[in-house]
Length: 295
Image (tube, rainbow, N blue to C red):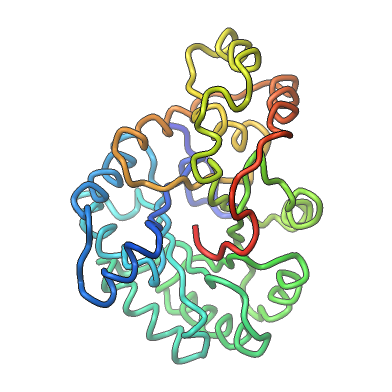
């Protein structure tokens, strides 16, 4: 399976990762009542990712899925995995971040987190304190890289000024071929500053998985040049073919879907194919493009 460096590090990750956000209907019962609907199937989906060569798993303390990840990765060598999780804004204080990290380490069953992220923006003083704590965690060896999520360009620039010892490794944003607003400002900034982008909602809530959405002509041309591909594989491959620092993280909830998604790796479209695909996607619209704070 293909492996690429994560940002400027020598850490090897699969070009695509998987996310473990299962919506509020999962989070609320799991947090309040301990009811985890479809738990076994979700664990199987994460394991299907690992079996397909994907070693990059994204979660968050608010998702209530860190224990599922721990269960799914049992028996896998830790140094072969890239685990990412997030701290919720409620805990954006120095002590709060330290405590949240310790909880996440325990729930993930690991001694360190490969990528620890601020889940969303908050008041500058709170972001500053959170980053100070994260840098301390890096110094202690509990965290290897620091990331942010749902920060716009201005907020990202500000966050970078709060770093004293380390650097910002990544940002996580709502990004797909039909929702490309970050290409206007944030993406060029990230390219220039060697900041990786994790793309959540890469399939636009499933809107982009319909084979009729992008047109049969485009799909047939791509299949002619690259073999039989599904629309899902083509849409996910768009990230891999166009950018070397953007990693889609579609949700892992169905083992069969995860295996299909993994087929987006190991090949690349030509610039001409990318252009035609983007043109076909111009008319695509999906729900709730703005205001999403989770993946």
